[in-house]
Length: 236
Picture 1 (cartoon, rainbow, N blue to C red):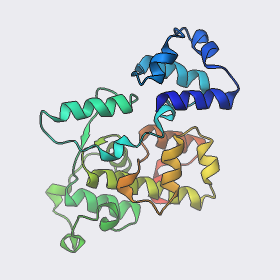
Picture 2: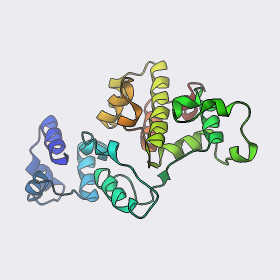
Picture 3: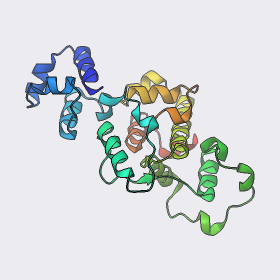
Picture 4: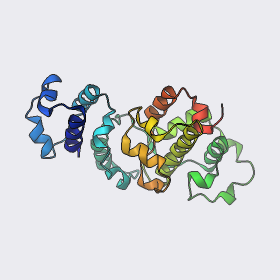
């Protein structure tokens, strides 16, 4: 997967793989190792990403293995986390687990973003959320924007949380479209191509695709001079 992406970008940039490795101080013997499926170090990925001016996850954008990873809260999860790290080396060791939000927090986020709770998490019985949520349960020292960034910054450990992240990301896409921003313009920010295309494609199920992460959100905010409040709510 990495090897094909590496050859692809070399071809797009009109350069040969061997000179690229020499320029960034790597042995050309790595080519055969990568072709046979050897793991690429995070340091090498950072060097290649900087050389070509692309995000690290560019080299894994066609790897859909993340859609089938299910992390549980037990010792066996360590091996699964290893494979997530291997497929997504940009995820740092201080990664936080994302599993659930209580009903009050879902209510708060949905109200802030102007959508139904069921849109964020179809598994929630929205009829049970009528009226004001319990004040103690709703207590959260983070602002709504901070809470949304916290949600997007975690590794989803189940389909419901992945759905939540994707639906938040799709609201961001909708608000970009209100500004007249196109998929092509968004891709010009060097976001992961497959992920970005999937988020603009409403026909795909949210559990089948990847969400924006915090870095994506800040890159979008800077690239289009939009506030976090606008990206998440469509209003300033």
